[in-house]
Image (cartoon, rainbow, N blue to C red; front, side):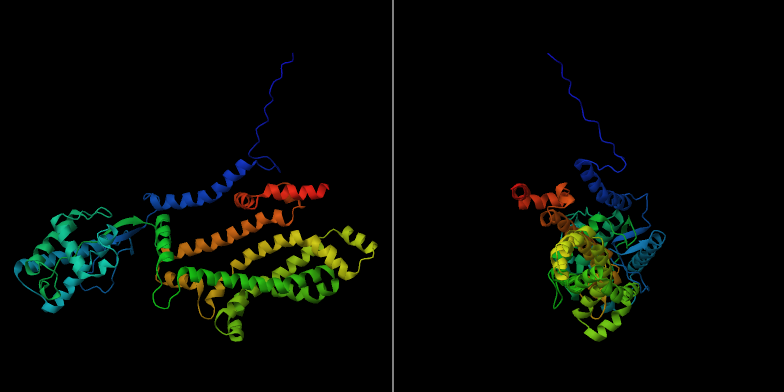
Length: 463
């Protein structure tokens, strides 16, 4: 009897020169590639001592004699926030002094209007704590009852919690209001000024870098909200942006591929077209935006044309270079067998470059996505870019980030799906033989039953 010992395969090194890692490690590193930036973003957003230069207001107030108005959600610098709080506290002290002295300043109608604004001050607290919906919070009578609930202790704020100072202010204000108007009535509002709640806030990143959960929640609200009036929904904007990108890219392919193949095949066309195209590709496409609007008017046509201009000239040069890299021995063999020029192009060149051409078009499609934002800004602003531009102007960056992420995810997923389909379109290439595919490729393979497909090809090849 011979003792057979099991020989363990050597462990694969993480840093092997020109050696591919196994599938598990590749998948792990791919996940880390996305998780590390997200982890860094979360670390900066949720760890106050690292970097939180602002205070995000959860509750705000007007100040007497100051025109600048801050609302819940606005950002203030940490240095200015105590000054803001102290100013409101000073206004409240003056209100209490006037109330104790039995004096009034200003007309009764003016004071009632100011008191109505003070009642509405509790709106963000009522919504965030779930006491009222956004529609209910538009009703002053509902807000009036909210003050009653806070003052009597029936409503306990937890998200965020009201400070003890603000609870006392709510109690003092309600004692004054309930005497004159147990049930809400604008005519019975006190003619004595009410105190303002003192501003509250939490440390936060600058407004241009919202926390991840804020981006997710705001993106969900934006994409599920019903459009108002004639405005488009976010899904309609998304479809419009897809149309701009893909139409511009398709027109570029329809013209650029034939010219690129001809330039790579015949030196005549190469010398005729490529010098000017090589010169023109250095010109920034946005420089032609005004001209494109003048030619194609102000709607979608100039946007599609800009995507075309941004991809066409690079496409011709890339495809002509790919065509030149075709193995010359294939052409020589076909010519020896008597193939004509058209037969060479149709039966040798096009089939020979198609796998590489497929990869080129994948890369160029990603290039066309980079022109989307600029394209949708020319003429009449439209699509996702119009939404980003509007929200950015009002510094609502928590609405801008979801759109940026959506564009990136769309481009990435499109590219990965196309890369995964390559092994089905060109099963004879090395990529198909090595069965290289990522997680999306695995999902596509499961959908298309790859094993049956490959077995059928192998069976045909052996026969």
